[in-house]
Length: 361
Image 1: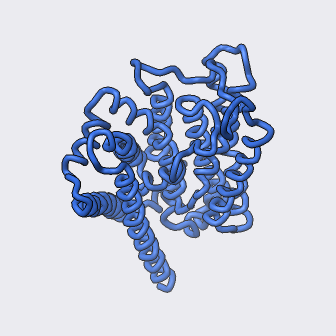
Image 2: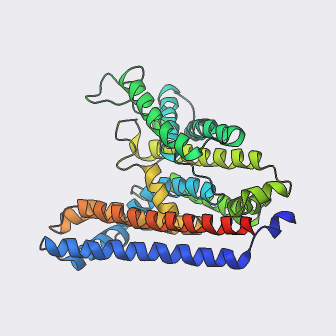
């Protein structure tokens, strides 16, 4: 009952509308600047956008590829959203995802002669475990020593990249490969393709996780406590909530989701770890944009993930159907990140000022 009193419904609805409007304005502004850039290079922006959308959403292969690419983005978006809701900042989703993917791939390579369903489940479990354990470090530092989790998780990303580079270049390198890569996972650890397309059961697994997180946000006690933490952590602690335990739990869930994203991507798309496993800028960093676009809401995240996935798939198509370089979509994506970041930090500063005024009263 005390937790419910911490949730201010009118303010919640107002914040949601504010976040959604910011996301829409950021997307519109980024696409508008994209139009100006394409006009400047003598291209037809409207045909470019048409081809991008039609090839990624309105052809069978394009739609299946869009759904496939959206699977890890849904998970990394949820991983960030669940901590942002509590006013925590897990910026280590990229590292947690890479770690989960790497060791899921190693287990997928080393284990042999076991039934495919069990092999896949073991690899997924290893990915979840690695992501959660890696997230435990900043979780404990935040809960017990009040160390800024944003700084710790950011720095750990670079540490894990260097560690995995060392391992993939040395101990686990595939000697038959002409570039830095681990061995290919066993066929029993691979998600099978569905409908003769790129889509696999990994997409439906991410949808199942989305449903579970939605229920967690909407109907569970932890979901209410999460919202209370985000509104006023000090007041939540004063009402008797075990804030340290809740912070650790949320960051561990976030890490587990990130590790699952990496493991699923390994077994449905990459099948071996390479230095470009996550792409550029990376599935974890993409998850941050998706969470911002989706206003840190599970439903918003899944919509944003599908939208962003269509952009990524469309980027690979427009060079085939237009004279516009695919990098133009990267520019649009970067502009969206810029506009959303400005809106997010402006809102954060506004909330901070309001809380200071309330404290003075």
